Length: 234
Length: 234
Image 1: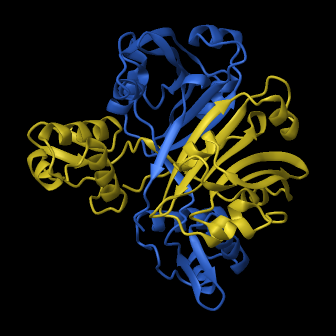
Image 2: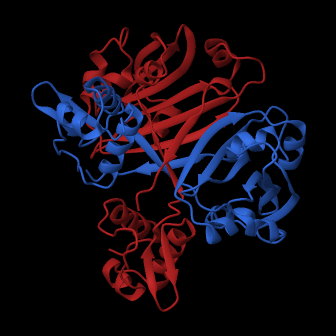
Image 3: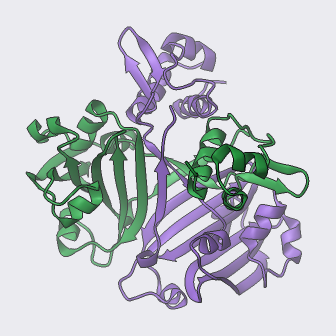
């Protein structure tokens, strides 16, 4: 199978993350990598160039390519359960289920969960509070073919996120952070000022077989930020 | 030196990241960790509890604490140079210096750079373009005591970020992601619609000795999102 430059980037990133290739190590040359991945040398070159631009590799003419010792240009955000996040900040956590219905996937749910339209899903909308103030509005679909047990859960006292983390193993995930304006309903539910933006975290989670769940976690922008502090040990 | 629960969390996170403690490994018990860190057992307990809540550790009564095999509840965002980011998306990169002045640190610069008021700093404001459209508004202070060479750089053709990455080694960094409304000047410079929010990335970088630089990188919210996809190999 011919690897794409994205496949090659991901494989190299995985080796760096696992410290198979440690900071300062020389990695194989382009010709050897092209053989290893069964790809054109130009494909390998593009992967190496992008990783070098991101600061993960250091390329030197003649001296070869090394894993960068510093300038790991990235940020790791720990994303705790919302209850843990509120309690960690010294707040009192509250939870309220707004909507829960099992249904056939409409166009958005089908796209988010990578399912055919009409596939069985559970739609949930929940509010999470910190000291009685709305902190996060959660909108979620769960793939009931992959997680049938969710169909029997009321989610009236415990949010679906906590239940999923405890009960359903996952193997990969995607996070998207973005800024957006709330609609009137969201503004009201979250108790936001006119003209205040949302900070939105979208998360999709997969098992080895299928998409498990997609969630949109919306926070009042004036009261929320994501912080990451890194001390690279390389 | 007595370690705080934050010190202990950071040390444990560093060991997990470096795979000194790999997924599934049993870590030392609370009593041993309290001895190792010279801290109260309750301090160690708080660090372990927060790491468990974040999904990084699994705690079992009697069976001890292990590094979690899955549910790494976090997201790693690669943060490339803006030029690389634009070119990677197939765009044509452009750069324009708006303001550059050496000055004594005012209240905001002093706070951002952790310097006394009046300390020598370089203030910079730059626009980065993708295919001729404004993509990022960069506002930056550089600590001239720590990076005196920056005082001689015009930054007219190359942005300060690229120069700093190439010339100035750093040892730790802090990233903050947030949503905010632009002021009229920012909206005009970035060519944004009325009512469109900003996605803002703030980054502070330290050498072993001092703060090097603080930057606010503001993007039009309608055209920008941060994406991270993880395949934990644990």
